Image (cartoon, rainbow, N blue to C red; front, side):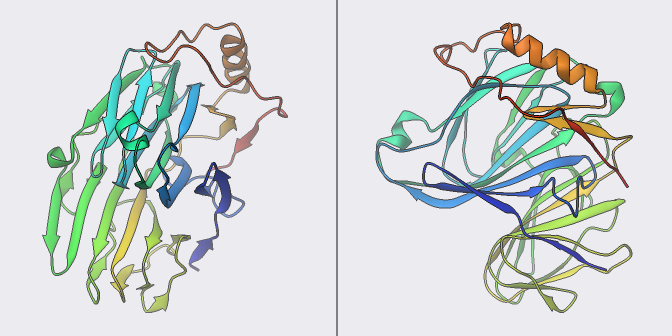
Length: 296
C-alpha cells in the first residue's frame, strides 16, 4: 500500500518549512532521517534566514535549492554560498558546528527561496568519521534531459548516473523537473524509495498525488510519475539503516550515551567556533531524552 505523509509545518520568520521525516509513518527512508522543504517564499528586503551556529554529530546534511542563496559557514573554516542546482554536503561525523544565513546582497533586495535540506544518518562504522564539508557546483552533477524530464543526481546513483558527492551507504537522491504530460519511472534500483512533490500536479501509477507531501510507493510498485502541470519533485531513499538511531535536536547516533556526550560538549564549547560567525549561537534546548528511531 502506498504511504502518503503530510509534513508538519513551521514558520520561521516568514519562511514556511515542512518536515516530512521523521514522522509516525516513516522514521527513515533509506539513510534519510530528516526531510525539510523550505518555501517557496519571496522574502522582503532586509529579511532572510538566520540559522545561528549549532552543532551536529553522526549525520550528513544535504542542501539543494531551486531558487535563492544561502551562505554556509562552519568550524572547519568553510565559507560557501549555495545557489540553485548546487549541492552542499556536510559530513558531521564526530562533530561539527555550522550556520546558515542569507548573504548580504540577497538580503538587501526582495528575493525568492525554495529548496530542501535533508539529513542522512551515517552507518555505525562512519559515525565518528572526521567532519568535512563539500560544495559541488550545479554543472558538476550528472544530468539527463529526456522527453520533458530534467533529472539531476544530487547524491548516490540513479538512472545509470553517479553523483560525485561522497556517500557512506547506497543512496538515492534525485531532483526531478517535469514538463506537463511528461512521464518518468522512478528509479527502481534501491531497497527503499520515496518521492516528495514540491510543486505541481502529478500522478503516481495513475493516482493523484497531494502537493507538498511525501509519498512512499508500496514495495514492487512500478512508480510511474506523470506530470499534469510543471512539476518539481525530489526522489530519495537507498539502503536501510544498519540499526536504530537516536535523534535529539541536531544530533543523530546509534548510542544514547554518545548524544549525552555531544550535549555536554556543546554546553562546554568543545565544538569550536565558526570564523566570521562567532558572536552568537543556539543554546542547547531543554528537551526529553532521545528515543530510538526504528528501522524496517
